[in-house]
Length: 367
Image (cartoon, rainbow, N blue to C red; front, side):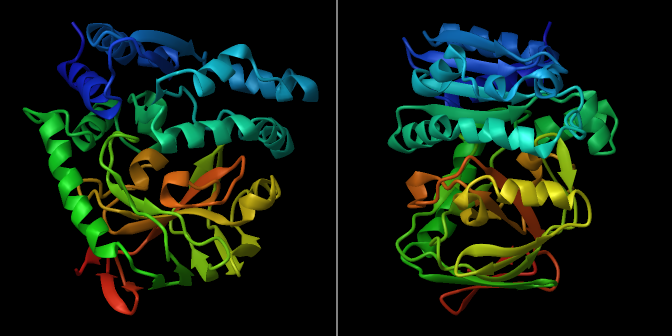
């Protein structure tokens, strides 16, 4: 029998996050380590009248590809990739790695080459998401690798994951709808505002949000959810930001990141660890040097840094920013093959002012 919590997670994903309807093509992307959740999701998709299609990624395959493929092979886009981006009605990405540092020794230029070749597909994905023709969600199935990164036992990490996803509640869908209403009140207050200014240790940043829309991450695009986000006006970002936590992307951990912005563009970037990788990603395309997203973490049930961005960016009292592609539904016009989230902890000695009014102090909302 599958874990009741796995069944609960599948229920929320299919019935709430993806809202699967009869006749829809639903892609499930995962590794075999997530087999219990894959089976439960596929079962619920079928019950809902949808058509599940599995995209299985074996552990170690990404490393094999980047070590052995020619440049042309890295650029090649398979028919399956096009189907997932262009034809699927819903896509579920289940993070389920056996080794989160698998690509640490890969030349960043090769990863950048593969990303650049998929710019058009990524833009198609973002456009379809904004127009509502594609529902998607990212979630995580607990594995030993994530537990080790979080410095927990697997049992403790499972408790953390399922607790953050609210699946142990009698009616987790109702719980997420209640969270959505709480976050919507913040969005309603922010509607029509024009400028944000952030001051924190090592950070002094200001930018415009004039004409931009705030979106509610309420467990639909990410499970767990717990953020509100927008797209800053591309040319408006000025100042300096110090990111509090390491950031892992492309199988490589970058630590101690600091960015300096002038008129929206990163003009200087440093890191204490893997700085060259940071520079490589910033050179991917012109949009990689601009912010595509700015967000506040609102999930105060997540208080620990675990090394997995899906959870860490939701920590209540933090903010995060993504260099690269923005979400069109926010009004962002920034396009890039990159979307890289980085987190700044605001829970001590910090203020956020919106149009001159105090919005957050020391990680607590004041409005």
